[in-house]
Image (cartoon, rainbow, N blue to C red; front, side, top):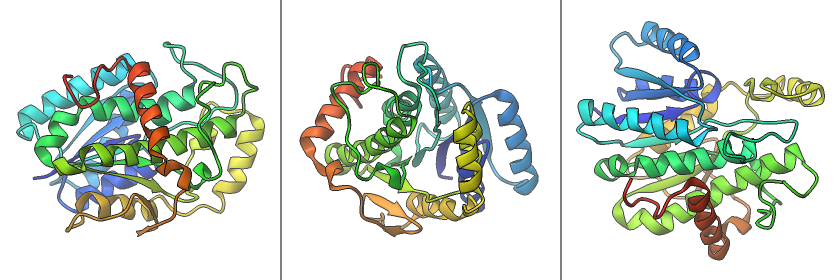
Length: 287
């Protein structure tokens, strides 16, 4: 049985991805923000898939110590139940913030969760991904287009904070990380994708946001597609044979991403900065 880890799996896109993968007969390891949400999601999935194999883990992935704890638990579970193998990792957990807010490590929260959490978790699960010849996905967004990474002030500590600007930057980082990952590890049989889910009717815009953001998101959510639609793209990338080509996917097809994401010098700069911010000496090396 093949195994997939899905973060942000207790609602929205992540929950729909978990459903899609259980329907394909995969073992699904859900990661949610709280134990309460995880148990609720697990109960719903068990009712829908009584023969399915699944487990839930919880942690605030915005905080790096929590990423490490969850990774330790996932690796222990994989060693016990899956011969240490992981065939797919879906880095879907994400956030929108109205105001400038930092994590316990002093990192801007959107950058910390939308980019660094997936970067660090992927690093910690690399041994399992290598054993499984795994595929790694990141939930990006079309909003990454026409954006640039502010390497001189990536945490918005000096410039005026822009909730949308910080969000767009984090989603560009997703595409750049996937591209850099492929340059480094495709020869080992590993593969990464950035997925644009489109406008989806989820509650991401209502979580720890202010009045204007909530109002705008309420209007946008009304026009969004069900989460099951982008979940089909994630499922195809996890399980598709032969291995799907392309980097950036939307609605079941390879799509065009911002060409800025293809600049290898910027990819390498982001990779090195992410290693430094996560305290990693060598990504994919000793964990």
